[in-house]
Picture 1 (tube, protein in one colour):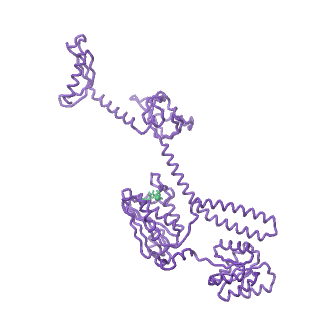
Picture 2 (picture 1 turned 45 degrees about the vertical axis):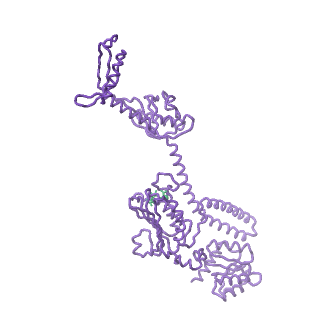
Length: 577
Ligand code: ADP
Ligand code: MG
């Protein structure tokens, strides 16, 4: 020990003795072999009335004692500073010690807690059996682990998670219990919020999907109700029933519209466009989304084939993939966004599990991030599968599940290649249209966009506006394109305007001015058009046979619901064969 400290202690000792006081203090000494040790030094005067006569000194080696004292100090410091609330009780559950974290979490001060039973915190959320089980566990010498809902001093509730263990003495007897508990109120709240938002997203997807189909069904029901109303003109009781169905359908349609609004998928619209174009447009936004340490590298193929897709959904796919890549690169790196024209033959397809032969546009997002192991790769497209602990806007585990769903709807597929520590490539394949982007730019641009699947066109002629409207509606729901007019003259005009681009003339025979038959004759001269005529007055056998001779099909009005679509379909089929 330092000479100085030693001398100071000795000097202090003599001063004390001179004042006739007893000296008792620790002192560090050196043994003859040079090793240090701690002593308790006790000194007192031999004759208290005359301290100068001599003194008695005793030295006690307290090295071990001191070590365990230090150890205890370390432990108590640790307990004091721990974030976990700790409580030590005796065997009856009387509180003997609480640490500062306990004071912070519960609002009870040390003084208020000491001597009390932990029951002090009971919130009434647990029954007697719950506490009985805890006591049984710890009395039998085991550790109890679990969660509590407890009450703070101010009456507010909080959630705790932790353990209660028995404390043993050397003889193997339980001398008390120690509880270590963590306040998880905040954590649970965040978890609940995250789960809620995930659920909403999932419900949104589901609602959107169902509402869309359901809406079409409702419109069909409404249409047929209208038709029934016409058929049942003279049956008041049937009409009033049908009117009820109609108004119920309207209410259902309102509900579906609300669902669609909620899911925001009301406006899924397929158009033809280039993935280069939307990715280019998104680049600026994507750059803002990623850290400065991450480099976004676009590699767009020239003359990229167009895809028939929903723009919003394609943007969502690109964004989700880039966000995932970003999350996988906490230390920065490169994200390459590449587009390619790809033609797959049977050979290539045999090596790609989900592929099929044909021409495709491939959009890939490559990152130099953490990569994924087998386990993650096996589950990553599952809804709610996530490895992200942080509850962020994107850590819902739905990103890839949504992408998967969208791509399925587009008749494409997605595959992934990943190596732990190397990075990941996601490739999205969508069927390619024949046109390339350049071609479209040079020609009419947007005009072709909405063409979609080629549907068959019907020219509908009927002077009864109600019947015309309903018939048109029903045919439209069945997927036909329908243009309707009220007279033969208008029909001729429209036919001219549209360059005869119709597959079927579906006309009433009795019209103001020219009849449906005259109209059919006129149009048939120009082009081989299928003709389906209808009339409410059709007992005229001669007229009917004339129609037959001309090759016109005939339907009686009002239509039987079951026969309208069937007949139209049959007539159009015939034309094709
Ligand atoms: P989320 O991003 O919300 O976790 P996702 O469905 O988007 O949900 O992704 C699911 C999981 O797939 C992620 O949690 C992550 O483990 C893994 N993953 C997705 N993309 C990548 C990537 N580019 N690199 C590494 N892991 C990824
Ligand atoms: Mg994601």
